[in-house]
Image 1: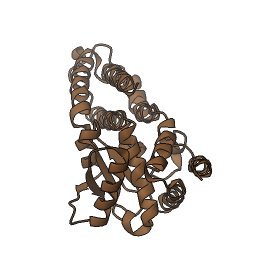
Image 2 (image 1 turned 30 degrees about the vertical axis):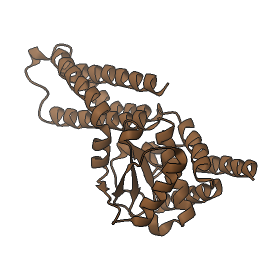
Image 3 (image 1 turned 90 degrees about the vertical axis):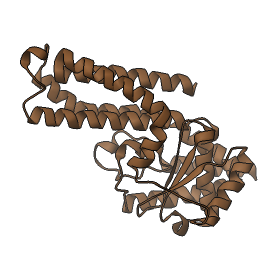
Image 4 (image 1 turned 180 degrees about the horizontal axis):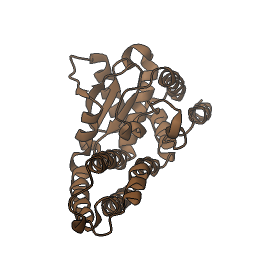
Length: 284
């Protein structure tokens, strides 16, 4: 199912790029956008994890850098029947984490710098188990592709803004069908389209990862406690990151106000905690 979703996302991205290219540059714009979309399709599948990690300023960790973290991940991957992922650290003032990669053999788990000091060992286990659940549930490819697509759309908008600022995209006879008003609307609406693409990743994947992670770690209440703590830090100390990958994190790391509040990429944390409490009651 996730393979079909990934294919649908790539097809939708191609159509969106061609449409925006037509609005901004007429026939030539459509041709250029189609070529860019094909390049993005290939890049999204093979290199999206590297692009996402780079966009978040992630640095790969070695066992000597965080031996306790490596021991935790090794224990949980054994429980989940998964290969050991690469581990990364992301700069920032809040505890948070995400997983990326195209499959379990190419997976990476990234954590923010303060997660080891601000979460208890049990809470950290819950968070890591949640991220490994995304790997086990085959969520990471479609999520990473969506992040790359959103970043590509943001790049296209920036190019369009500079193009309009300096007088358009070449000679008028090369821009058959160019409409400056439509181009301006494309610049305004394309970021919203990027948010909608991120929302196309069903919020149910977070509920499923919470449930699977609770089984991997055996500590659903620890995960619930971690979610509550991360949510509080995210409200007080939003991360200064590229927002195209915000949906990858276990809790939305950005400030909740503005347009981002209208297009939630995560379920309500209170609902996730309630479900984990139910899981804990059944486990007991």
